[in-house]
Length: 367
Image (cartoon, rainbow, N blue to C red; front, side, top):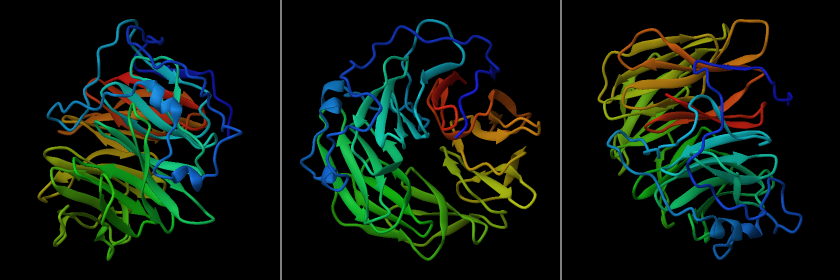
């Protein structure tokens, strides 16, 4: 991996650390794997408890603002591009609730958290094999711990309590996890989507005859892209017939949904170009919101805009964070950095957040 670059630019000119929000107490977790940590298989015991999560005080979850976003608390201090965490090797799989930002540090094999307003990053899950996909709701954090020597696992842990539960063991690699108010959904090996109650129980396969690339859940419906068929699909989370929202899409990838539209990325790997697309949730003519220089696989939306990452055409390796209105218009560059490699993105009601696994950082910027 490349060393982090000191050259960072942003559409917002003020760069500083936010102040005014209380952080998690430093309980000595650090970012390195504990030398005395249990074996990854035994750490999945439903009775296991991570003391650092127990002491962290992570009691608050997302507040529904009516747009499918978590509500961010107001932070004092300077505004602009903020580094919430650094030295996070191969940071990815970002998630946000009303008080904290969560991500995976794949090298340390941990799940981390930091207050939205900045502070000391805290280890809330440790001793994993290859932690990957991540999701959070009002009470718990959910993640995948992938294994190449046995079954992968879908796990949950109560925020502020630390009681860990293994919800399912899965053959293959789990690439995405999403949750709604009652269920967790996982996507494995680009081959199937499975649903399970948040507390564990009976698995329900939802998508197996397609080859889903990515998924989203919103208002009682499951949405996914199928890169092999070039389609964007929808079905009830209770099961039933799938309907096509859009077809003829070149290599559709990431998907994100709000109350009115599904948005997704497309790409032509041979020519290394792509687009940000959208269509009404019930189907209709797709609309191209923006062209992309690279084939983006990272996308988030709120009620009014889409956010994604792209690359520049300059000779330097530069990743950029972009925004465009869902009604169309000229895309805006929110931030860029030499030798950046943005690996995941999330939004709440005030800010956009991302992880960068080459710069080893977790970043925040007002929308």
